[in-house]
Length: 589
Image (cartoon, rainbow, N blue to C red; front, side):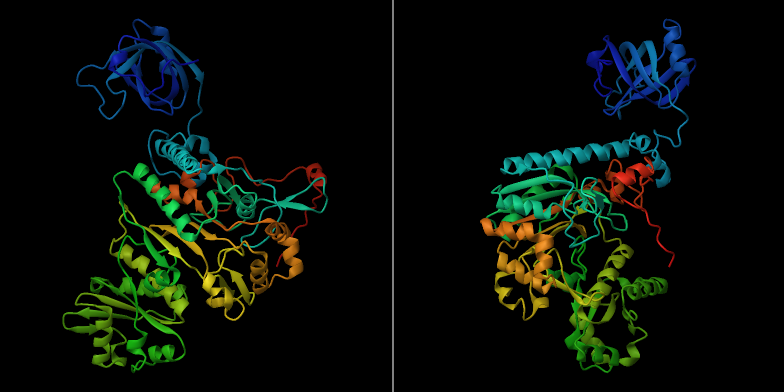
């Protein structure tokens, strides 16, 4: 071994010992001809110092060392002089006098400083990711990621789950996001895809009788990038047989609480709130509500259906709704803040955003002239508003109203500083619709995926009212972020065929895309269900990071590029020929 000790391991009990240490030059200081260096490895820091009188050659080597040089030193541990201890450092009571020093590897001048957490452009950080990962915050993110994943593995192992690796090269069965396509060299004209998730494979494992499966699974989606999305990402994937929805939820609640108890020390963790999809949308305007603050949307359709304000009256008469967000203390908002909220509402499909401010001397709003005072009084009563509050209105179809006020609610919470980073608010959102209408393609799509089971009591209405059918589905939400989602699955071939038909999947197409699943249903499929967590997203929240790139060791940038390796990149023509691929340039539009 090159070293006898790690750089966080020495203490007063080692004083007088001869040691060999290896690491990077973190900081270097020259104090009156004596060189002091903070030597760093993954584990910590140890201060080493030269002795120019007794060990001149070692002193000269340290004198030449610069930031991020890799050193190997031999020396003797001694106690630091009284008053010079560093209580913030695990090894702060000692230092090592260097008798022999060797530069194992020099370093060029750095593109950014490692020893300080200064602002560095993400482009530079990703280009030199191996340097970025040396920084304390990034190192801690990678270590914490390992610890959380190990904790999950240990927890599920104790629950009798087994980890099964599923293939990366699979058959393309497009039913969700765009897939990455891989040409087959030995089967010209045929292709593999990279899995969006192990969804079908884990269901097949249930049919194979492995009744408790999990995997830390790599998944791939060819999507546009954003803060919580990457081309390749990691899921905690699990599936269970002979279970109902409540069984899966109970297990995942225990897992989540256990993780937070260990890794969210000092945070306030709320109890799980259970909401139906309709409750979440009606009360919070979104299917992943942030429950760190109690700011609910109220439906006032009944209170305004006969009012004199034509916009509200006509909306209700035509099957729409009028919803409001009552905001405590919002009378203090500036005109610009109200204007910005209106811009946000318009971006989410609103024609505008009416508001009513409750001042000490009455109501203030551009729309008060359209109401009788008793009508405004009724609105205020229904909302439970008081002096100093403001009421924000949306009038439209139910889904659009929810979307508008859901977006406004989050920005209002920012205005009022209601999002407490020291609180972890947990909830389940359950029983999503089974189908949603696709306006662009004029057809029904699966809200989750086509293998999600409808509620038993809704099966009879599949063909009569498919948009009214609810499913055995559930999402786990933390601070307004969807951490994971799952469902109880269809395991009956006939029911699966009915769902495919509603989705516009012909029998022939179903056989081509999902024949392996349908055939497996003929050989004794157990009732089963599961869930998948977005681990990158979850760890991002635990670490308090702004995006998932901060908790992925080697991520892509916002344009799906690997700036460090230079991918994607052209390949040799010979490689293309062997893969039976011909490059055709797209015509300009």
